[in-house]
Length: 189
Image (cartoon, rainbow, N blue to C red; front, top):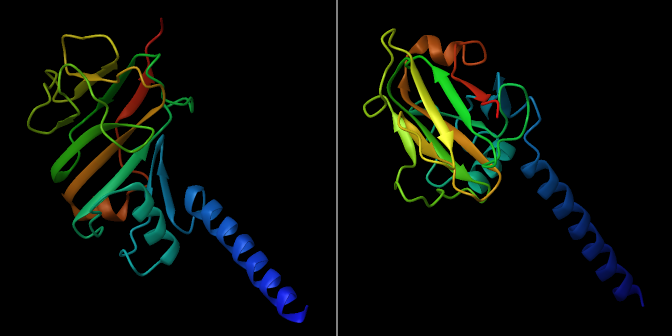
């Protein structure tokens, strides 16, 4: 009887502990591991492995994540007004080139994988985006074909966008929460 109580207590403790861990890993709202800039959220600039919660979150959400000394990752699952991104809607991403050696904006489905599409297009970067005359860029997100900088959103529903800035300039690291990042605006229907 005593052995059964101990086993039940251990199993209860494991269940409670794993539930709390699952919740904390999947809730990206703690200032201890999250930075925000407009609709973009990302990891704080701690090295992977120095913050266990941050490391667990990165392990769940990304493959082959690099340390912030090499790249900054920012994710958006909402538009600039705070509405969830969904392939039922069209969006425009408006921005200026990000101050880093290389940057890209990639669209992923809710399951963290690329969205299959007939154009075989998954991202834009500083080399393949068409710039406006003022050096800014506009990327069109839609499930229907667009002529200019089209990023297909498929028909899967929710999606999210990831910015990667490889070897960002020092002022980017030091001011990541206040630098100018692209906006994501829903197109009025």
